[in-house]
Each structure stands twice: as structure tokens, then as C-alpha cells.
Length: 174
Length: 294
Image (cartoon, rainbow over all chains, first blue to last red; front, side):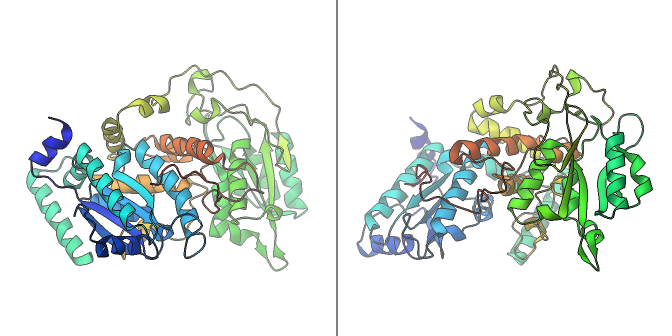
């Protein structure tokens, strides 16, 4: 039994967050829907105005909140609605991806693509590919442990109290 | 050293510069930064292998900038900088943070520095950044002091080896960095000493929304250290001040060095090389690689 089967047998489904640009990939996703193409329902789409508008902290935040994978997708090079947004994004993602890779986040967890408004099929394919990739490597345990654990030596009760305070504060602050 | 003192005194006497930022000796094996405005105080200046601080960080400080302002306009500031520190000056000029014409760079012909105050200067205690240094003197400076001597051969052992960490599987790497970052107490000393961390308001200080948690919990620590490394990637000139200032001994320069290697590998860009280049992340090339994108 390979990894993928093991994870699926446990009834686990990956959570994947996609930051897609308003002008191309979002329209591409729309086309995938109107063309009635099938793709896994693991993808939660967040629409942004440009792939260049996605701050790397959005991605870290997605991982912190339990995403197993992240996709960032925008217009093809030279097709950017803002002329150069995706060129800037491309450089930034090259560096960010290298950094996360070095810090030990598997390459498959963070993926990028260029999908135009007419590529509904490509969108469905990309979503399927990422979902399969993430299913292979399983839940993002490394990051999720960080969410739970306080590493300093707190007494158990104190820990629980702090966790509760954090969750309450998060609920208030959003 | 005497030459530097004479030269600095001259500058201040002729009112060519508003202040000299340099090093002064405190005790046997330690120096500290000093800002001199009185010509007679120039005798305090020293140049030796204990000049660890990167004084370029002060050039962007509001109180130092205020010193340079006068009724007649902006006066120059003189700064004592090692050849490696000059790279930070170049990077700041590239990013329009300081102007070359407002600066008088007094460089030293460097033969390496110690890894920390209090150590004897020899091969064992050579600072990590000096091991493969190839800029012992700078042509960018206005004047260089001291003679060129050979850097001692490094005979010590580095605590962490970048290539070894690269070889580890991802989960082990994450474990390693998590353990390191868990030591972080969020004192932001790394940010305070970094000449290139000059944002008036850092992203960690922003609270609505709060992107990076400020408690020293694993999650916030990981996010902070990753974001710090990312914001410095393609900009860090490898002065190693962050690591030296870190009270918890986190090997911060591992990330910075890795990103410098990556910028060179992917874009052929080296930070602090030339003021003519546009900055790495502030520019783009249509011919950048598309390998990462599906």
C-alpha cells in the first residue's frame, strides 16, 4: 500500500488554498465550471487582483491556518492586466519557493501556474495534479505541530489556558 | 590608526563632515561604535580586528541624520567601514536610502576580524564571513587606512554547515529550523542591527491584521524568521551582524547565505556589487525562468 492509499484510507482529504488573479485564472476557473469540467473539491479559491498582489505572508498564514498546500496562479507572462505584475511575482516566487524549500517545506506544498481565461481545462488539470501531489505526501504535520505546541516548559494547565486565550484572541481579531 | 585619527580630525576641523562614526576601544578585546563631532575626540578612534559592528546601520538613524542637517544644507557624514560593510552602503544607495555625495567613506584594509569580542585573533577565532573573503580593500571608499595583510587561515570548526543542511530530507530540515527558531525570544536585535532593515514600520509591528504573531510561540517564530530572510533575500550583503547580535545564537546567516546563493544561481545577482544595477526584487526580466510555473 503506498502513501497515497494510506492517507486516503484514513478518510483524509487535503485542504488546498488557491490565490488566483481576477483577470485570468479566476475567469479560467469560472470557465471550468461553466464547461462542467470535473475537478477535486479540495481547492478553496481566494480571488486577488493580481498574482503580484499576493504577499508571501498570505501563504504562511494559509499554512498556519491548516492548509496542506497552496497554489498561486495568474496570467501568462506578457498577459498581465497591470502589464508587469506577474513578472514581479515570478521573481518573488522563485526566491520564496527556494526559501521555503530550504526551510523544509516540501516543494509540492507550494505550487505556481499561469492559467488564462480560456484555459478551463488547464485549471481542472492543475487542481487535479496538485490534489494528487498533496495526497501523496499527506497532511502537513510539520506546520500543524507548530500550531499546537508551546516549546517552552509550561505546566500543562497553563498551556491549555494559553491556547484558549490565543484562540479567543484570534476569534476577536480575525 | 594614527593616520585615521589625523584624517578624521582634519575633516572635522575643516567642517567637511558633521560627524565621524567610528570605533573606540573598550578594554582589551572589544570595541564599540562612537559618533564623534569634536575634533579633539578623534584620538578615540581605532582600527583593528575587533571592529566587528557594521556602522552603516547608523547612517539611516534619525538622530544621526539630524546631525548632518544644518542651516546651510546637508553636511557630509564620515563613516569608518570595513570593505565588507561598504557593500551595505552600496545596497543602501541602490535602494535610494542614502546618497553617496553626503558620505565620506573611510575604509580599512582589512585582514579579517574575530568571531566575537573577547577572543584572541587567530585562525581558530576568525569570523565566518572572513573565511572566503575576497575584498580586503575597497576601491569605492574615499580613503583607505592600514596596510594590507593576509587573512589568517581558518583552522576552527563551523557549528553549522550549509551544504550538510541542504542534504537533509525536508522533514529533517524543518525540524532543524524549528528547533533553532524556537529559541527566538522576538527581541528583534537582528532587525535592529541590520543595515538593510530600515522600514519605518516593520511588518511584524503591524497589528491590523497581524500577519506575524508577536508572542515567541513556534508558529510566530517560524513566520518571523522566514519573513525576515525573505525580505533580505537578494539584498543581504552577508555582514553577519544579525547572527552576532542574536542573544539566542540562532544561525540566522544560514538562511541569508542560502538566499544569496539562490539569487546568484537564478538571476546572477549579487547584492552590494554596484550602484548601477537595479535591485533584484525591485526589477524584473522578461527572460526570467518559467520553470517553477505550470
